[in-house]
Image 1 (spheres, rainbow, N blue to C red):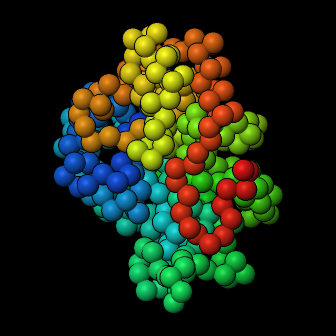
Image 2 (cartoon, rainbow, N blue to C red; image 1 turned 60 degrees about the vertical axis):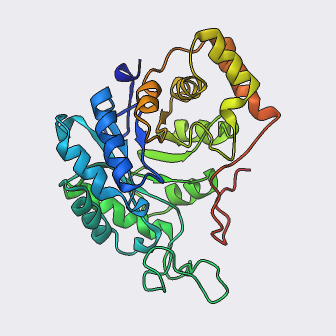
Length: 304
């Protein structure tokens, strides 16, 4: 099923429904993971400057027999580069060894000090994150700079990550915003189904990509009784159930794995029965959990 499902973005291009996530994947492992995924049939690879592994991701793409134009490649603008968008993109393109990415995302709606005590995670004396004052720079200004990239041929679409309805409203209402984000990539799984955000984005023509679609080791979603029941009834794994649930809702999903057998198994999505979809939707009525919630020092997730 995965090879046959994709979604049309408002930028006019299509994003494959299933991709390989590469967060927290060490260099040697991510190289093999990307090669394996492309061999299995994946056409969607998700990366980010902040992950620190763009180079092996790009090398795997280059070493794969799959043509670059047949791969949907995403990378992300890191928070210390909000006022240096063009520079950041060029750094990522150099790392990836490609002259364009299909999708370029603002990783977080939080600009950090570009000249702080660390190039990626600058901190203040008290240990808190060294953020740029909103009066000096904000994500609306960042987006205005990202919009300029569309005329360079270096990106096919631009979008955001970790944007709440609150922040999307600010962005969309800004007079400098002339392009609606093609994608909002957010944490999304049955513990955090993001019903309101999903509905809002759909109404605005913004596609949602789900990261951490399987939960994580700190959120044992695959052991949930409902997930296990659906898996057993369909002869599928818990991961296949969760991936299929996300895709069937209309999201693209990017499960991360460096294990070849899991990468292959994750590519085997299926059609989930309506009753099972409803049961999976209902998990959040009794259990809710957000896995990724960095201590930014400012409110990010306004919708909870």
